[in-house]
Amino acid sequence: MQPKVSFEDARQIVARARLDLGRGDGAGTYMIADYGFESAQHWLIVDGDREWTIGRDLSFLYCGAGPVLADKFTGELIQLPSLYDFEYIATFVSVGDVPPDDMG
Image (tube, rainbow, N blue to C red):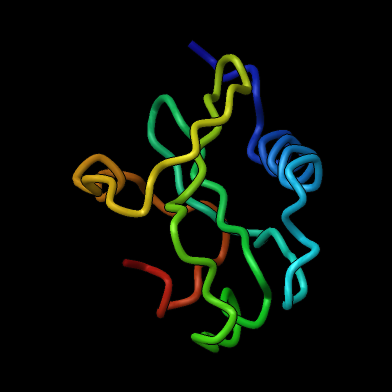
């Protein structure tokens, strides 16, 4: 079955949800990467403060939240906790040009 929600759609859904939750008004510059990861069911959207996501500056690391998944068929978002068992995430494949230091 073909997904109803594209990767770009999922990025926009996450952007709207994060802004609604007040993310993006922290110390850093909020961004959503133009790359991510996917499974048959989910998109994994890479987002956060640019200073951490791109620059790896630990002072901008947002603690307490793991990655956000977007369901490819419903658009529902799933915010994973930071202590999530990442075995499922390890099965995802890359979407777009993933930087080598973000390949897991």
